[in-house]
Image (cartoon, rainbow, N blue to C red; front, side, top):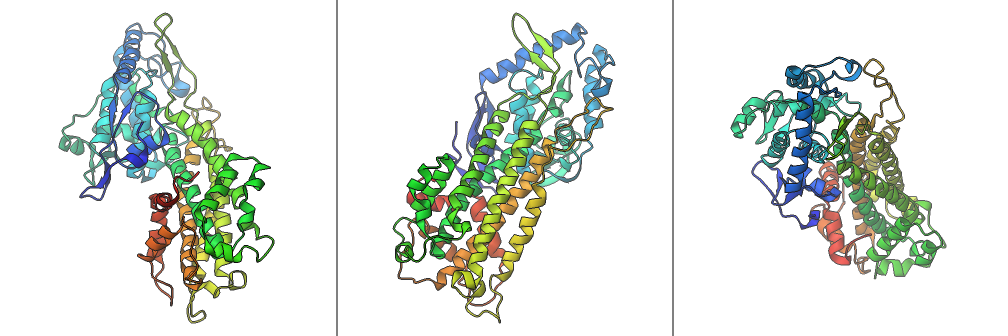
Amino acid sequence: MTALNEMSTTINQKGIIVSETIITLGQELDLNDFVAVARFGASVAFSDDYCQRVERARKLVEKWVAEARPMYGITTGFGAMCTQAISGPETALLQKNIILSHAVSVGEPFTREEARATLLMVLQNLGQGYSGVRLDILERCRDFLNLDLTPWMPREGSVGYLGPEAHMVMSLTGEGRVYYQGRLMEAAEALGLAGLKPLELSAKEGLALISGTTSTAALGALALYDFIQAAKSADVIAALNLEILRGLLRAFDERVMSVRPHQEQAGTAENVRRILADSEVHDKHKNERLQDALSLRSIPQLHGAVRKTFNDALKTIETEINSCCDNPIIWPDENEPDVISACNADSSYVGLAMDTAAIAATMLAKMSERRNNRLVDGTLSGYPFFLVRNPGLNSGLMIPQYTQAGLLNDMRVLSTSSCIDNTSTCAMQEDYVAMGYNAAKKARAVAEKLEYILAIELLSVFAAQSFMDENLKRGRGGRKVLAEISQNIPTLENDIFLFPHINYLRELIHSGRLLELVEEEIGPLK
């Protein structure tokens, strides 16, 4: 499989990141592979095994439709109407109708990467060979990814599937809307410009394309990727802050970690030690006090617990990426082929993982805000209030901490669990609903806010540099970071427009550039 950091990427004339990498479906994908396609524009191909297993299941569906075998959503109605028989000639119309009637999500559309992630999840879900769709359907989803056709999919109003996916399917059939070459247009026009013809759905296909955890897992995967990147970045930023505040590395001692042997806790402690290796600042101040405040002293414990939560979520998300979450399942056993109605479309796994990950991210953010507060409060840091040389006349970095407080309040609200809720649907046929979609959707918002909170802490860390003894060498893991920031952000002498600098630092975190700078010096972080 292709690691994300081995990819060759460029930016095209439309400002879209594109990749020369090709990800071949038919083997298991990891999160980096997934994001390579969804975010960085890698192309998709099918292995021979992928094609064969899809076609094997499709033959069974066609055989059973000809035999008028009762099959949920294929030769029967949907939901509470599952007892209504559908004749063979009507099976295609049934699939068209389910798309038209289910395309009722509302509000702002998915971003390009969210729509691409959903298309990729459809390919992974239906390509396991247990859904019975034609290969033509999956080839069209592949064409959308490779030709950069982005379905217009409103994001609000899903309980786990159906609505956004139905809008996506409409674009495949030449209805609905599509972004093509950076422009939103009617799907029929976009298909024509791309040299494609609208698809016509056949038995089972409409249901299979919308019933599953595809959009839920897609949003969850993107959020989790950003969470994991942010957690590593938080180790870097916390280490730089610890150095600025003349904190003690004794709290990060291997002996301390060994008597509470959580792997992630030890990993964070090791990251901080390596980032601050050969720091003359630390050496000068290491005996000034017995212990630091908790926002410094317990970095390994809190960051470690957060990272464990993300690692647990990673197992869930990668399992989901490589699963069939369709209903019904076509079981293509040569001896006992079967069609089984069940509920792999349930989103509990992703919902619980994303609700928990959002809580963990908020805990990471609350410690970042407290560390930042210690820097801007002159009574705690020993530096000028708000890290500006002329306080009073200038507010310096007073208000970015307010921004952190507002973002943190949002994150606390968003950390309220979605999947504990239940609103029954479909005339009590779906009397329990997992609500995993909302958990994944809000995790995306939580990840963005976490990046901004960390960016503001990093802004304060950088501003405090000008008050330190410039003759003392900084830890080797942070030197490149501070040098690159200095090329983009000026020393804070008087008040300046801070908004673009906060955005620059957030992008430094989001893009992974912060980690690249550190790892170029000290190797991969834990």
